[in-house]
Image (tube, rainbow, N blue to C red; front, side):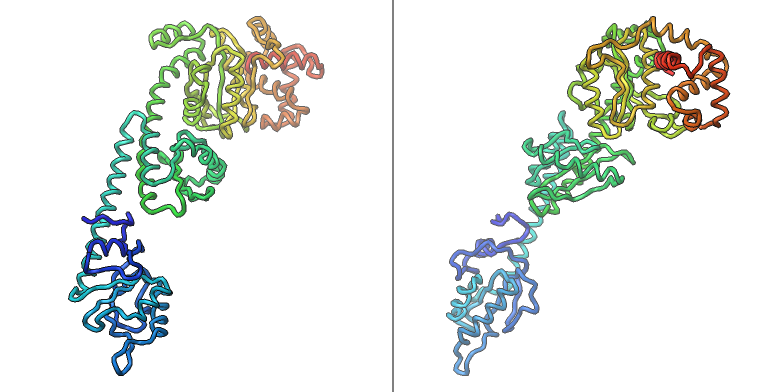
Length: 525
């Protein structure tokens, strides 16, 4: 198999001259150029251009060259017109077979080809034109086989990379090398998770805005985007209807078909890797979920026994938190990929509330709200870290409890859950230390007082009365409270009268209103 100087799928004039040796020699210029040859065509017409597409090597014996009655070749003007027509059509070169018609290439043709820059070659007698055609098509077939072999090798290389320990960076590295470009693995919101080569990280970050716009319209599909002097193809990675991330490939324009084929293979491999990694994360979160369920139920002693069995070091104190606004797996995945998670997070798992929330609560009524449940270490830095995480996840929101002993974790989670319902997207409700360093209004004594203060609302219908009290304190009128509770205004008025009777207060008294609001927040109502 002959090597081709072009390195592509089409033989060049130089390749043909090397392969045919003395059967095809360059005349003008003295060294055959590297112009690609799309086909070999034979024509004796004075104007063969209607039958040419461009890129052909035209073979002729010169029968079409007009001559005088004395047998002299045509004028230089005629050859100039003939050559100009071929150049305008874009032929790669003109090869003249000498012997049968002309003993040598006419000087007028040589001059015209030299001036116009048309490569001119010679086929000596008795070499048949068929030898040139056969050699060209043989080289084209060999080139196609070589390109196929290279493509298969690149695909096998990607598969082998995906089987290693660091599958994602290995696939990106092989893909970038095979396409002579760069590749990036992006989170569902467009944040770069891995980029190769590393100096393309800034370019990968520029894609985040475009991907967020695609997500906003639900366009989980491939897209081609201009980025500087490169074209970038973005392919989604998905498991069914769930978006796992994106693969981006950057290449100098235009992106070749081979790169697109390799991208599809990489998409399949990275999707499998993402699904597998997520299943491993889910399995790893199972012990966390068990311990969190025990702590939320108040079974602290059982949680500590289980933690010793599982090899988890539970602290004496901590801060509980709930996150929502995104798919729970997306939240947990973001935790795994966020710096500082290991420093602050003790336990993380899915919190299945089993009930819907009101508007602003992350789900429609009657549907389970997806929440991520956390136990964080007792530190003032935890709030800043969690606030940064939420701000990086569009639509996410959270609530963070005050530092407390694990014996009171259940109560703290109930207060956090109540606060989460009114927390706007992108925000964190923090019950912990304020920026001034003042202590939070939370202690076992205060909680005991709050429960005693609201003891009158613990009987039948107490939950409705507590919800009405909260709405009445939050709103500025009975009408506003009625809209929040989706009941009639007279229902609110009747409940308020009953609340005042049971608690022995008047809601017109600002001191009583402040006292009851604090009691409600402390009891998580």
